[in-house]
Amino acid sequence: MSQKKLKILKLLKLRSKKDLSEHSRALSAVNAKIDELEILKASLTKQLEYYGDRKNISSVAQLRSNGVFTQKLNVEIERIEQQSEHLAIEVQRLAAELTRLDAKKQKIEDKIAFEQRKLIA
Image 1: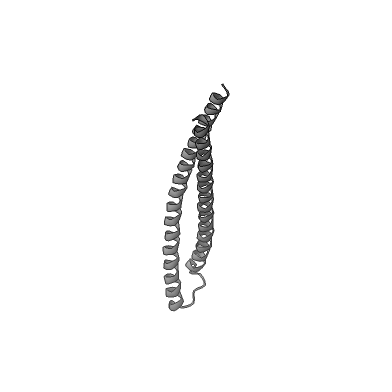
Image 2 (image 1 turned 120 degrees about the horizontal axis):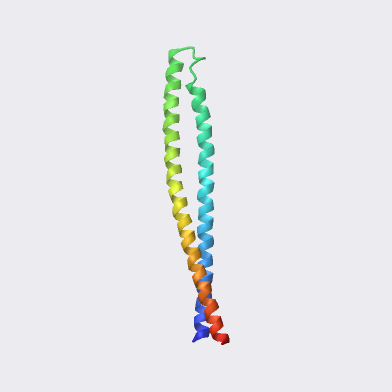
């Protein structure tokens, strides 16, 4: 009976390692997406500064065109900020899940050690 229980525990340990690595990869992907969004936001902010500069505008049409473009850039920057906030929440959720899975893996390892000691004794 103990041998069977030990095999089951070892399978559970492998499963928990797999879950842990999957969540770790998901966390890395979300962090990469956040970095990508930050780079995009920085680029759009530079464009916003360029089109928001009214020093070298020679006509009313150009002023209107730049105004419309700055509005579009502002909307896009806000959308990126919302996505970043959503992804930050996802990072927190994944980090909590990783902590939970790590604790579960440790508990399984402790049970395996206990069962092995029982078999030896």
